[in-house]
Image (cartoon, rainbow, N blue to C red; front, side, top):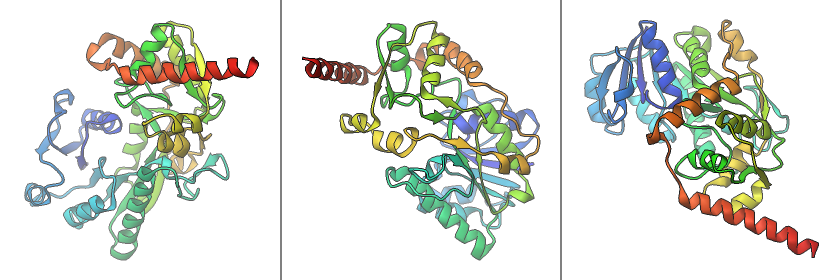
Length: 338
């Protein structure tokens, strides 16, 4: 198989890149070259900014592909560019959308690919929906061979997946746990969530590549494991070797009291219970099974981060905000009891 990835070094795409290269795929990566140092051997690099359409067109002028996948498109204009670049040059164009595009709030917590797309809380999700609409039109009107893939919360060894964290990542929450400080869990922690290790996601994605039955289809790829947020945080604390000190705070309060984009990330996504039905993926890729249980995957992630100081990005502003939120809630309880 001859494939081109736009991106190829992110949380999702890096695992796919690794598995494809190990299988002998002829893989081209088109990116700016700023994160290629960790790539496994064998990738053919096309160094360019995808926004420079003329330059990219010159690089691929004499190339054709079985699969082109764009991991870094977020707005319809970017897909319009991709259509101009790759129409007639690929047998399959794969767009990475988002499971946050599904109906929010849900009318049924069980999500299939037939669940309506609607998210009034998050512009990011609405843009992904608009991207899907554009591609579907090109498929219907022009025969552009699309496959739409919707990931949910996917993680790797470089970052701990959480519900509430600052703009610099999740390390500060882990640091609070290690310091025996309370950490914030949105809601009461009992809503349902799905975490997917990127190596499992890669297996499903690769199974869709070159798959004639996936053309014109939308498919989500997630683990079948369902966890509460309390279980997620308890598992992370256990991997760190500490006891969890949890403070539960409503998502609405967190949104109102923070400059972070909690309206989208929480009210438009993580505050809602989700359980994904992967039956469609398993029909298209019968061999797919997610094999990395969350407690197993997070132990590996935590061990890797603790061993690499460069992944431990501190966020004092977020840390101080957590302290303030917790102090305000404790003061409110005392005031009511007086």
